Amino acid sequence: MNWTSLHIFYFDNNKELLVKCIYNMYLNNFFDKFFYINYWDGGPHIRLRIANITKNEKEIIIKTIQKFIQENPSLSKISEKDYLITSNNFADKENSEILELQKNNTILEIEYKPEIDKYLNNEGVHISEDIFFISSLNSLTYLKNSPNKEMVYMHSLQFANYILKYFLNTKQTVLFLKEYERYWHSFSNSDIKSTKLIRIPHKKFAEFDDPFSKIKANFTHSEQMGFIFNYIHLTNNRLGIKPFEEAILSSILTKFWGDEYENKSNK
Image (cartoon, rainbow, N blue to C red; front, side, top):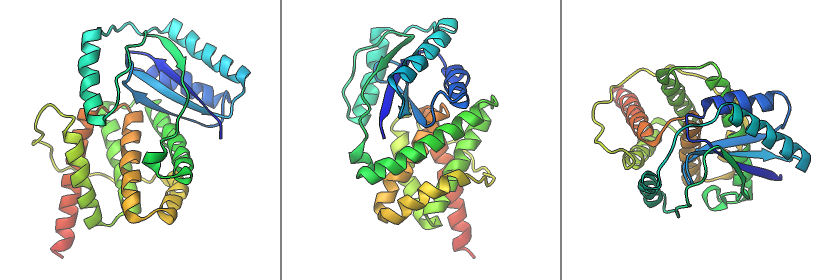
């Protein structure tokens, strides 16, 4: 599959850009398959990957995004100093290099390089790209209804519960979440102790079942752990959830599943 990768630098809240421009283009058949992530390197931007489009289609897509940005420009400013502070923090944790700050309200076409090391082989990458597409559609369909922050958090928790129950038993989930929580707490500037045990109603995400079954069939249990981690995180990312918020959600999940495990053990 041939992917075009557009990095859309937009320093303000990008929800309207995602829903009213990118999602609207998909609904109007500008392209068939895509996925996106929110990213920080070079300044806040959307990395939009679009499959199998022609040069002419790409030009139309870029012009459509540019028109939206011209009519709804990002007015936020980021100083080089503030950017370096944020970038150094993320780069240290992700073991990555820092790119120079890009100009706000601009679009760069940058080659898409599949993360084969992260997804183990070409098959893992291709299945994951299917999941990224489904995740992007699920996130944008949800965000277009303008949910408040608490509703977005619950959607995130429900998706996490769905994927955890699909792949793992209760004991395995508790062990997984301890590591997941530890990782995300490294992105928080404060010690998170006050999260409450809450009820997380079941919600079905059946559109993921087919690619999930392929991951389950083709990769070992230990390999699946990495996939699960990334799928939860990237869906949170698409919902606009920041790393410090993911730290809080990880604590809620850990308490929820710890209580589940304790209840089962006492029966």
